[in-house]
Image 1 (tube, helix red, strand yellow):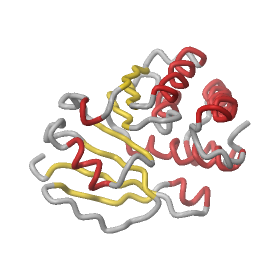
Image 2 (image 1 turned 180 degrees about the vertical axis):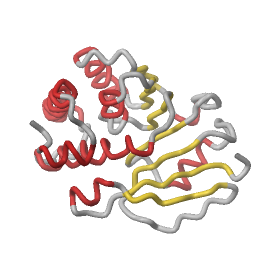
Image 3 (image 1 turned 60 degrees about the vertical axis):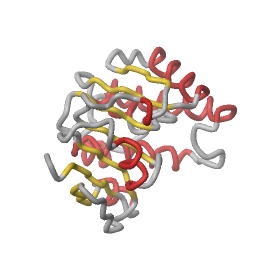
Image 4 (image 1 turned 45 degrees about the horizontal axis):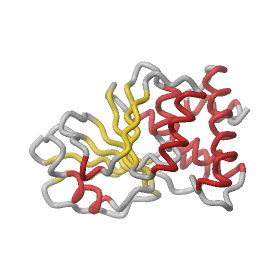
Length: 200
């Protein structure tokens, strides 16, 4: 299994079928990464496990049943969220055609009926109905807000995966750093930056 029993407990991932699909997903990333540059070419099995642990940890911060994953790339964290939250609708958005081809394959292979794919840039996407937007390694918090602030509503929450608290200030928005349980598991700095409108 991808996760040992202690990690399964900490991340609340005990369903055998979900664990098997997470392992299958990692295998798909490794296979396609040889030609698609989904993650670093130098990524080891441990690196990929850490990616999954990072993404599983975000489940503790999710309270919406509708999520947009911006710059989804290899599907991190969107595919992981979809696998562990089958009742939640996940939209995976990316402008890279090769990565979208991979996500299309993953959706079919893992039978992810709660996933929708959108091949476009976030600047061109109408996110006004989105409740929660998540992203990982897409851009800096300020750059992301700059790109999407005209396309979201005042209730939209942004949840960015970050390594540590950088004391980010964004005019017109609340920013709150949240420590991730992944930090304790991986013994590395891990967290989330929660961004919301001051008008909400």
